[in-house]
Image 1: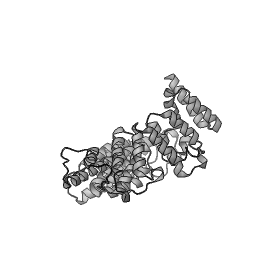
Image 2: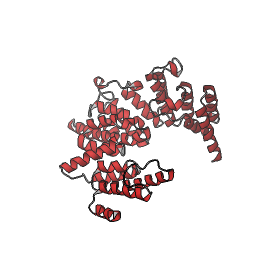
Image 3: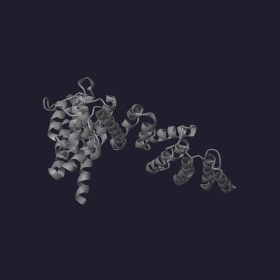
Image 4: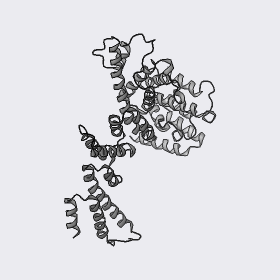
Length: 390
């Protein structure tokens, strides 16, 4: 009877009812009553029932997604499907919006796609692309701050890349149009550095060709990126910001008070350029050069500068220097107390530094003894053992 009913519900695409039916079948298959409290389950029965429930979620979740019922599908897929697979299917659904008029179904689908992709963090890059296409840059920047910024840096980076690409394209288009109106031949120039050079005297102000607050926000988001192409585009945006009129150079946050200058130095250093200049700048912002004080004697903004200094040194291929800064100037616990979220674990820094400066792992072990940091000490020994075995 239940099997026949399941076939009928499947033919009629009554997915919610089918899920309820599958739970009844799961109960009976595990010797449980069809309704009511099942009491305390033996571990093997509980595990078997949970697996049947998970399979039921997949059985109804994917067809609901195929039907464009994104929110309903997510209720079932949230705890049963791999995020990457859900993200891929959302991309396919999003493609179906292209060329469609903004009817009620299209609007509902868009809202549900944005909610699951962005606010449920299934695919933040997709959510941001949809917002950019349908709601504009301002709403998208705000949504990034409210949703993506709470994710780990490794998940922020692809989303930040969406906004870096978007703002770069917008800036190129607006700058091309502006220079053409001014009689400057920009035919064949399709890069931001080329257009900035075509604008003439680098000592003269330029722009704005995009909303300055958007530019500052995207430069802030881009700090999570480690991909060289994104760092290069971010550096180009920072160079453009350096050409803005003085009255539009609004102060930024932390060590990036001088947004254009600090961003230019940071991104250049991450690419292995002007590393010494960037290190000197952020050291000054951190108060290292002047006071050399401990982490406890620094304010939060100075501590942020310490973290960005470590990040740029690590990305620039100077992990031994980054390790020394981390051991000398991060609070006890190292990576556990970083506030940017970008600082590599000190064990990771030490392992990378070992190849350049033998004894770096021992240096970290000694520091752990001095600090009484048993957890990092054990972690360092484990990493060293694994490296030796390899």
